[in-house]
Length: 593
Image 1 (cartoon, helix red, strand yellow):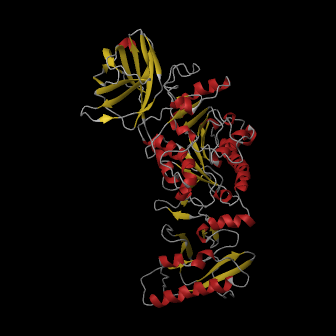
Image 2 (cartoon, helix red, strand yellow; image 1 turned 90 degrees about the vertical axis):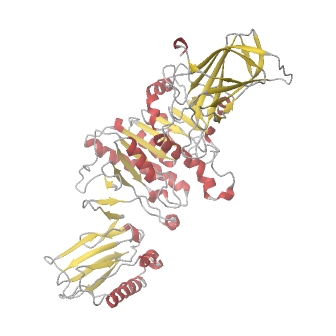
Image 3 (spheres, helix red, strand yellow; image 1 turned 45 degrees about the vertical axis):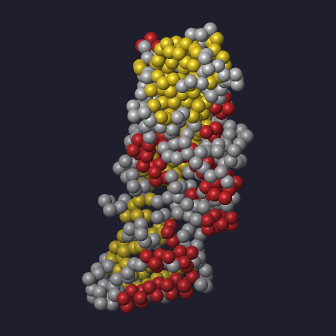
């Protein structure tokens, strides 16, 4: 399209602002007085001009209709040397004529609204672009903040179509989005245009780097928004979301794996810049999901393991399992590394990688997740994502996700790992470690254990629905009889209203000896304000003795979920085989607490 003779030049009055595109895709305002406006967009190597004339005495309004945002080729048409000019001009002028006809009598509007439907070859979809002050396309989605002129950044919006494009035109891009309590709902650029640090970034505060994983569908992580809200509600920190979606969105998983080291290198350059502004590696906490966990590890390697902390949320297993430490996340990559394994027989990795490795529900077959492939995509990703939701739950609930150091999940299930006392002499002065954000409280103990080449693998069970929490109690008894036949102890808790809470017991046949303490671990779905305890003893053999009775010197019930609660005790009572006895416990004697 030929350029008009009297196109805008320097000194003419014009302005351009970004409109709210939460409901409409890419919208711009052009305010003009007695000028013709020329817009200039590039498509590949060709250049096409869109021109509209506004008369000096008239204001013409181009209405915005949401349906226009749904026109297929408006979103998906690609540049073509022969077809693009025709269709783009046809659409543009069609909308212009329609708007003029519909609003030919409107005089109250003071500005021209123009919706630009176009796609730039090899630059991304329409929703990746807006207009700069020079009327040129600007990559990234931008929203206008009502309170200020600072634009909000959005996570890259890609799709399966971009995964297919990556087959023939692989690309990798990384964007950093800063969130703080001052801009919780509006991500900002970490660095200003003049390379200065964003004023909302406080170098004295802890900085969490949040890194997603493989995203073949190209969508925004479903957990991202809530994760940000929960973290900032918990702690006044800086959060940097690492958006490497264009690099993670591909049908070729191996390509995304190779991109992890490239992303780590890009991140290292940014971190060096932050260090120049006074930031500290010790204040950096990297939280990586799946492939993002290994990216965190590669960043840590580039800084000789001086990052403050890395949390791996079900680190990816395929292409990393069995690899040497230089090619995956390792405990040497940060001063403290904690891992949550939730899909060890699928998309996650089974090997312990950190100073402490949590295996909820054994690290596989998470409760509440689909059991068959007929459930679709949830069958594939549910177990893998559970690590993310468990970590988030530890920040939302008052329940402590107590975990038990143990050699294996089977040993844990049969009650061999009931508490943390005496576990390699590591936890005598602390309660069992807690999964999640608070795991750092055990940092010094775990680092010291790892230096002695002692791995810490811990296990816990959860429910299948939010908040996933269960409540652990350990019941211990001391008998006075010289001998007591092998058997099982079962118990239940009653509150003041008489409501019964049945436990999930980790039971095994136990031998009872005089003055020897025997412990039973139990898990409850609900916390209980304990009023009474129902206790039953069953003999292991089939030869029952209904007249047999055993003198119990002491019963103690202690909450492991809330170790600060005083334990409850009962003293000197008779326990008969297969006969339930109800006890009213009281606070234990001071010397026994």
